[in-house]
Image (cartoon, rainbow, N blue to C red; front, top):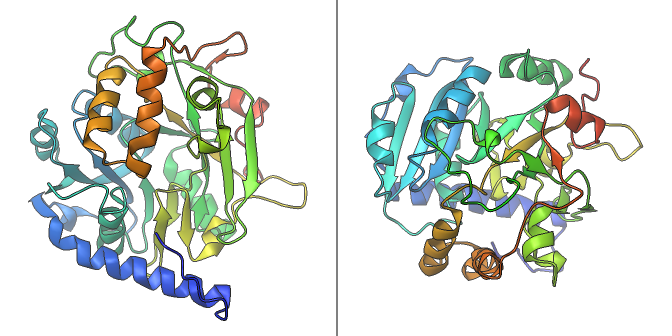
Length: 342
């Protein structure tokens, strides 16, 4: 999105106009969405909701839905972007899923965020809303014993309206095709290694959010230009209000107060991780497809790097990789924090 460039205008007014623009854009883009199964009348006032954009993720969906059901998500609001692998048919059969379909350009919808901002505006108000992709799995302190409702209840009591989660790239040891992923399987059983360090943090002065880069994708695919690597900072869980809007994926929001999810005075605020399980069998073919479609950021430069790296034999696992054993391990490494949540 182009930022306003009027030097005489205070930044807070520029951000306000940007937020109004994003909301208006989302309202306009709603016309591209065709409801296939609208079960939103079943949503109850205290329900935690999940918002998802997906394309051709049929093999991932059973475990993804069950994972978040077990955490306490009550309803899923999903945009299917012209899948041809049976995803839409599967989702229509799920009683806790409301599904919209569109063949419109993912790129022209700001990589799906116009559609998600509309659904959040229409259905997310006053709910805790989790916006994730089918390859992202939220872990947070005590997630093995406390449901999402315990976390959101504590956030409510603490006066917080947003919760951050660093995107943690998971990968297998060996080639991506060595151990095929099976439908219904926990993807972390296959991609169960991660980088414990090698991350760079910077503060975005305009939006106030942290910008995080690094990890295995920079090592394997962007070593020549680390600053071109993908952003790992996410704010996926938000107590939604009609005045809110995501700016760029779930990396940052407006108003900017929602982005202040860290402590600059030496303390720690509670945070989680999104286990990112992109790197499974079939990824090379998907990279080639997405490179040809050119529907991702900067003409799919990220997928071009993946395709080139994989063709050159790039490996994600290295001698410093750690095998994943649970949220406590991530806390010990400083990748998540309990903050004041005992």
